Length: 302
Image 1 (cartoon, rainbow, N blue to C red):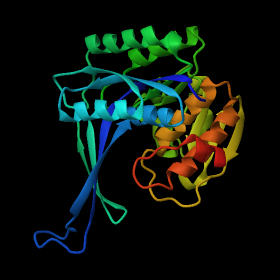
Image 2: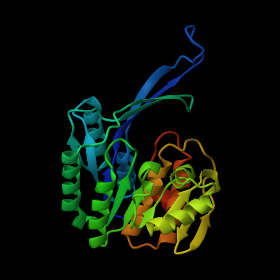
Image 3: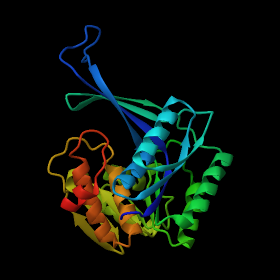
Image 4: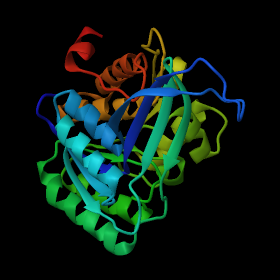
């Protein structure tokens, strides 16, 4: 995986963590009073996929947007620190998506979201597509990372997929239910079980996986939390038991799975081997508090 160039297109955001302690309840409302002790900033959403790729030794390039606000400046700064090359276009008409998590004694107390989810306009979509088409020949794999914050619509997804197919670039699509059925022809889609059921309006992950595989003509990986993962490929189903020993925080685990899939497929791995690696990586990252990444050493040990 070392040095593989992976393009990540999607909804970038800033994850802000306020860490503190609590030992009393507020007299104003039945809520804990948190004394903040430190703050950490992390890439979030599609930016976290890119961060995971960089942490494993890949060369991540992120294409998306951010505003010229404080959160946008900090997002670009944490991406530079993580070794991610970012192509984030300034949008003056909206704010950078920011999620603030307040954590006390290792437990998340509340999350506050600051965002605008309106779709990009046609000119903005053309700008993103132009950058993707320019960089695509340099990439070993391509990730579509969707958080429904405005980047994707059907036309953009179709145009990117057509271009990636022509260049024989593996496409890993982590799309929300609103866009999942638009990913026809990608290499693999990777929804969690809840997203798969919502998108297909079915009652079991097995039915959802078979439906998606047939409809999209692609492999399907459904992540199922403590029940592991299921890979649907060419009328075959392979189940991968959960690799986690202890679960502290599932935030960002899906991004880790997507990142490892992209690096593995971009390195020439088979789909089952790529999923096995992704499953082991997810087992590591859920054992950490907060949105976290996996190192090559941790994955090798696993």
